[in-house]
Amino acid sequence: MARRELDRRPTGDDCSSIAFLCPQDDENTEIVSDWAMRLLSHPLVQAYSLQLLKRAEVSRISAETAASSAIVTFYFGHGEWNRLYSIRTDLLDFENIRAAAGKLLVAIACRSARELGLFATAEAGVLAYIGFSHDLILPGEDHAGLFEDAVRAGILSLLGGSTVREATRRIKNKFTEAAVYYATRGRNHQDAVLASAFAHWNARYTLFHGDPQTRLANIDTPQPVT
Picture 1 (cartoon, rainbow, N blue to C red):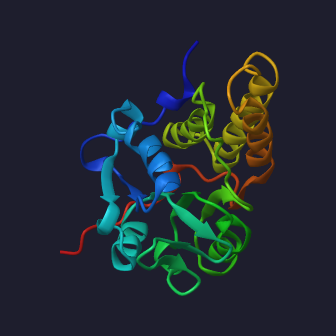
Picture 2: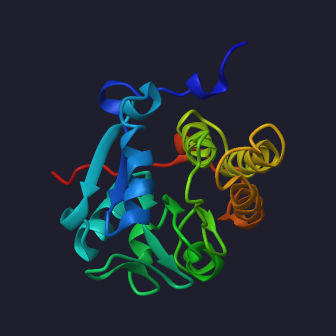
């Protein structure tokens, strides 16, 4: 079966920029940052020009710069209703989210889609925002790696040419599959009961704001100033 995610591969001068922001503040953000690192070798990621910022490289200024220059910024870290933040500083919030106007944001973080994502798309010109409207909860042990798979599926779907709606649905569906797995075939694993409940929770609170039909191929690539 042909894979739709291979439909769109930027090449040469058309190689658009994407950004991965990984503050890596604590154990939980190290986990989701590891998910990001394991994506780096995938052909769909390598097809783009990647801005990778880790640890102290992720500052308020660098987050703004990445969000303004990349067609999509993927953030792997802490979030609150109204901000994405590291232990060092607030990174993106109501005051500077306009840096991502005309672009996409994907926040693998708690809560931010509820208020920041809505403001970003309704008031700040961001085309679409994918994230979680409540806590993103991880089990103590995800033996089958299904929580990572859910996030990975959505990111690769978006990079491969899917719409924002389709990529969000991929994340929700994969978390739902994880919930079913840990309630049935994987029920003997340690933390299976919690893993099933948390996967169901994450599926419920995965959402997007903005234009559901947005695709990366439709976003203008910023041109260098000469």
